[in-house]
Length: 408
Image 1: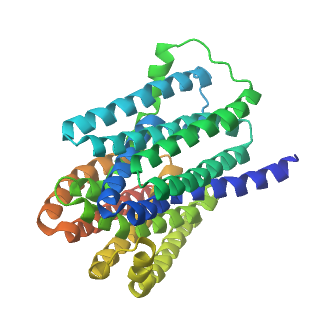
Image 2: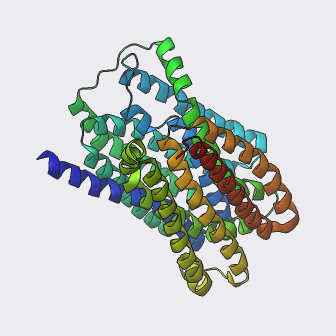
């Protein structure tokens, strides 16, 4: 395949695969809510958020870190052994978490099975990096698409027929494992990967190098889901379901915002080097774009949000309109945060971002637990909004301090 066509093919398939993978949690929750009921849906949405958080441990520094590796002393074999360590750690933590929280066997198994599902996704990211380094990103997109679509269809069929959530989870685990074996592994065999000996020093070095990226990713996910974690053990599973439903549009809005940012990444880098004033203008234009999309989304949510969610999930949500609007406003602030995070990352200022998330994580831990305990779902919604507002203010401040040094 000609290089130009391969690039276009890769972009299309990567977009399709990434989109399907990102929306799977939305469709899973719809299925569980309608088939298994709001109690199981509440357990499922909490379990999925825990699995996603622990996935960051399994994935550690991520595929992009492996693909862009420039240290010749660190090999793909070192990444392989690191992946084994982080995946085992991810699984062990899930078991310990369930034991510490003293969940019953049913809830514990739902969590552990979803963690295994995300663990396989983490393993896939290692394989994807090898394929991407071989300039065959389209194979990554095809793999993600196949896993997402087949898992979703089988999950739906098994759950409809058996009404057994645990069995449905086992099916998607087996589906992902099978696709890894029959599609992903043959792809990396063509790359000619050879796993060498375990080098403790190299693995420790890799863990050290990727720590800031890992810490940043872990705390980002914690901050986004802090309200869900605060609801667990305080409110009922049914209310966990409700919050999981009304926060879903915010997740989609955030994802859409990331799609807007992605095409500008290479442009921002070159602009920063050539014209700093134009770099700032581009950031401001992106902020205005997010605000415009956010304003339209807020109006659409007010007019159609609740009816659409009720149609999708089949449960009454009329009294949660104000909660939904509060969350959408919070998502707009997070969209702004994402833009300034992209700007700071382009400027290679990552340590200050980690510090911001450490501060905000501590802040939201106490805030969300307090507000949920005294104001239930409204408190969870307000906590989400305030957290995103504080996060955006800190990011804007950090960006302003940095560009003041340019003296332009």
